[in-house]
Amino acid sequence: MMKLEEFNYHLPAELIAQEPSPERDDSRMLVVDRMSGAIEESVFHRFPRYLKPGDVVVVNDSKVIPARLTGRKATGGVIEVLLLSARSTDDVSQTWEVLLRPAKRIRQGDVINFHGVCEGQIIERLNEKKWLIHFMTDGPFDQFLDQYGKAPLPPYIKRKNVHQKSPEDKVRYQTIYARVPGSIAAPTAGFHFSKEVMETLGEKGIQIARITLHVGYGTFLPIETDNVEDHEMEEEYFEIGPEEAQLINDAQRVIAVGTTSTRALESAADEKGKVKPMAATTRLFIYPGYGFKCVNAMVTNFHLPKSSLYLLVCAFAGKTLMESSYQKAINNGFRFYSYGDCMLIQ
Image (cartoon, helix red, strand yellow):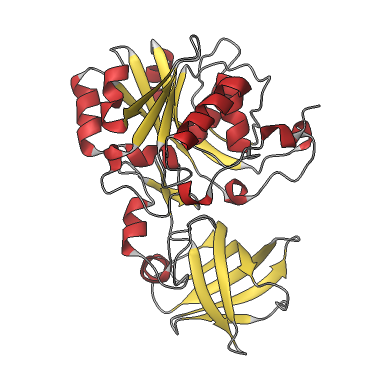
């Protein structure tokens, strides 16, 4: 058994990025060679230089919904709601699984008012963390969500006023190629891609495969087991179309953008590394000892210590090399986590 504590590291708080870089492709990039152990400092707009014709870059085109809402109970108390997944939907009436904060005094039947244009009634408590709410809106629910919902930023990104929505976050906590609504956390490795980088990849003959994995609330949850192997992942939906699967299977190298693309690809790959087109859910937990079947290189941000994402990159590049890479990034002032800098591991 591997102990989770073995995957801890110390990060100075000032290196947790609170805002995105002014330009997406200006992010710094650490280039890590798994074979030689070499670690090189670069900038993301140079990313295409590290690729060659025959490589296929696989991106997750899931779109983050503005899933964080703030409402008030009849008593006047403020309640924060994080939408998780829709149980039933129509234009003005929708039922969702949600997280609530604070949830201590919430009871079945309670009504939460959202800005005078939407009411949410508590249907039932599903488990220790999840609740079921039925929403009724004056107009289309999607319009209400777009107007009043906020980007579901992770808790380590602090805002002076947590109830104030940031128009910048709605744009920047999203990839430029996001297409399919469904995520409540962003596939952040894709933040660094700009229109110019995408065009340069095309000019070099590097093809882009677009797949979808809807990031769930499990990405916010810490691993709570002492032993790595005892952790269970939350279920997430993914989809890979037949044309994309063929493009991936014909690639000289498969470069996965992010841990989400990596998990989708590895979930869909057979033992020979060939990806099958499918729409399915996955609980795949990748940690050291896992044998990768499909992914040859990876673009990824710097992840929280003791997280499933950090365990994944340790599985891909080796724990010792990742420890050295992260320490180099810390020593050289790289920015960490969702709005931070990135790595290319190849």
